[in-house]
Length: 421
Ligand code: GLC
Image (cartoon, protein in one colour):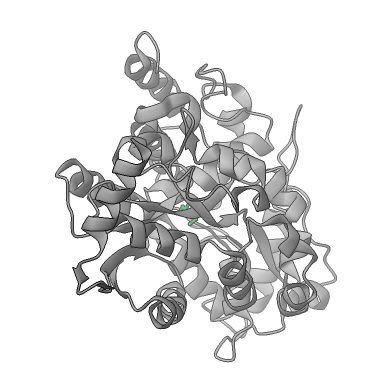
């Protein structure tokens, strides 16, 4: 059986001409933020030179929600044009049937990665995707401005609001475009990440708990989302209701916000030569809420590579996925993109620590990060998340109170759950 599978794989991946294997033409689909696609291309150039294969990037929008919608359609239609998918950490349970099992191919390297990350990509014993980088957000703050106004890095959301207000008002004398805080407020998966942090930081649970219980309709969650709604049109621009990662970074990197919530990729870019805030900022854990159980919380993110079961060149496609998740590429990724590695030993790498000091200090943050409820809600996760981000977006936009919207959300999620997820 094994030998048959291998033979079929080999025959479809390469054409044998007079005993010489011809190179495969692969395609990889990826949406990314910042200069992520340029980085991917630089790594593909090396893969092409090493293997003789060619790889085409199919670029996608950076919104993970938009990507997911498109990939689901392609995979449902058995699309053979895409070999390798760059996949979000939350997708594994939803797309598991459409990707090849990488368990065998990755058996020699899987032990290098953090076990929890491998587990997040394993569904019923099948390794659905191999990790490329992990993600956990930071509070980005302007060191220079905190110093100028003699302020500490805020430890609670209330402190953040007070400090952001004071500095924003002071700075507006010379910069009318100044704001206090920018984050991901658009109605998409990014808002689920931000809002899960607010709720968890107020001790309000994680929307749906690990055992499948719907927990979102509780007073701490109401307090968290009510507090966030008070930022819109005050410390955050009205336009923040449409911001994804890149729009928040745009405002921040022009020097027009005191604070920003974003993922580590914004660290390297903020220190780039064309950044107005190069050398003027640092990162801290996100603030805590108030009340029982309040503590800083970070949502767990991250990206992986999966191989389509419709690939015509599965052996070469698997090689590509393994290459892009290798220690060599992860090290470059860490140094150039400030993405957090999934390979444990890289957290002790001196080159990485020197280039991107955020990385070693973020090891503990991502290890304690809160997962979104993609495992307990299985194939319903996307719908659960969409209902959650809509309820939050409505509240931020002034359409209903958090109390009203979370009550409706609870009822909707209960319907969706039925007899079980
Ligand atoms: C980041 C995270 C990803 C998350 C997305 C939301 O890319 O790594 O897991 O879904 O942001 O916008």
